[in-house]
Image (cartoon, rainbow, N blue to C red; front, side, top):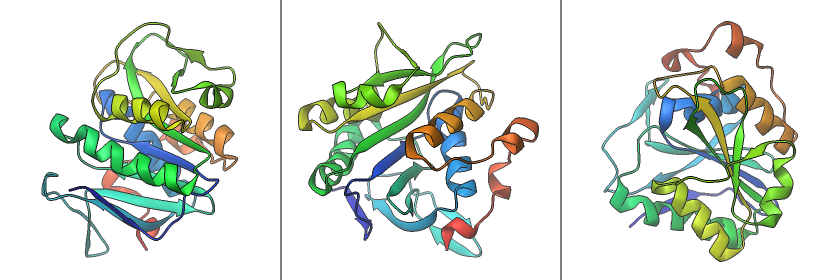
Length: 214
């Protein structure tokens, strides 16, 4: 069983999600955004089938998948990849709460293998999600897999707007697209953060500000 344990309500809010993926560009972007945006820890996603990994901050142990919130914007940030056989269950748990609470939009951050591109690409679950894409280029053809595909398909089924933002990457740990992803998230949520530090001095994950963990 997968449980989303949080007191935060997603009603009329925007939910940001990232799991470790291609180039880690989605995770790097969302972790930076949550830290610099002044988000606070509001819960976690729990399952005994997840890898037994905990993040330690200020001498305290946190879950492998944590929830952070600021006003009506929320983020689910995972430190672990989701096993394929758990993808539907994780996605269903998240989308069920988004649907019941009446979330305005779900935004998933990930990477796409396109190292020479300067664009951020999008895939939308429905027309409502597509309206948030703005000027971004849609992926015309391709395949999406794993928990990301599950979130998009369940969004379509439940009529919850889900927008997948894809930063171009070479496939290795790659922060080159992260400033663009962070800027697009700021445009969509209305909570913009300075990306200068991300451009000039990419953060080391273990040295990020711990205040968001409370």
